[in-house]
Length: 491
Image (cartoon, rainbow, N blue to C red; front, top):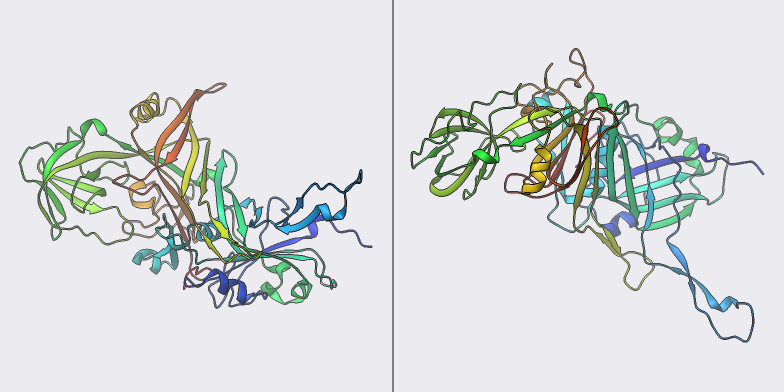
């Protein structure tokens, strides 16, 4: 008998590309071939399919069954076989897939986690540069529509046994994204699968090119932590001004109809400057224009607004004399950080009812939490800044992203991978534009839930946070920009 080792195993993934698939249809399709029309880590549906995952561990795909033990009075000192029954437990197959992260594989698992909240965005400059942009945002429907098939190949091409492990109906239950000084982005998705099987998949190791899992690894460099930007939206709650607001869509402005002259430079209402992060304003209490905006200071009663919402269009709803609208100035602050970690969970479940086969899958309440550290002496948002936010119960926004549209960091322009003007063309430490097209961003509207002042040498503050929905932003969003030649995740 030939010895089999874990390093000989191959792990692959096939993803349903259509946004109208149901769980039962996915199971019935039972796709097995790694073909040009399939999508995995990469693939457009017509070319460039790549399906193999270079994992940092060797997870087992364990059958979701258990032993039902019932002690019975049988007159014997030992157990009878009737006291044990093997049953389907009515639980999903569960396993982790730890790996180094890039925009291609990370977007796959966010698609499987956010389901109907995973969409493609439109941005003319990025499209011209040959990139597709995807957004993962909180879903509003419990329905699932994206599923994956995972395979652990456990025998060589010459094998003929039904021992390869296949999990169908896979969706992402939990996702951890993290990185620290000197390392790369690591991701650890926890997959729940609806159907487990043992099959003979050895013939696929005889396929040509990328249709053979031995040759189907995507040649993508993981995202380096040193190339990421970590930024905090410093919200100046002390200078919130309450006005009677008139919004004009045609001129993209907000005017204090009461003429209170409170929108002054001294109060933080200044022209937006991308390189310094100033000139951000939060609007709260309007009829339908709440959100985050870039602003230009026209005068002390009049601001010109540019939408910081996703996409390129700047549009407002006309409002006249809305009383009690609050305007709060804010500034993007780029910080140094030795580590960032975020954990997301969608509490998905498979419904088995009175059967051993799941009938469908749904997603539950979305939870976002995490930690990051920064030097205690950080300018503007260091010292007791986070302590004050914790004590006051005030939110801030944290943006952790890869990608720049020029030689300097322009957070307000770039953190959603939809830059104002030119497309993203490099990572932070690149000396010139390149063709990397491997960008990712994680954005949390955060409330501090705990903090710790620590450090063996330099004093650090470690911040624990929870993602929360506010008037100006969702609790969490993720963005991915990839080469359209190699990846198209949505029909």
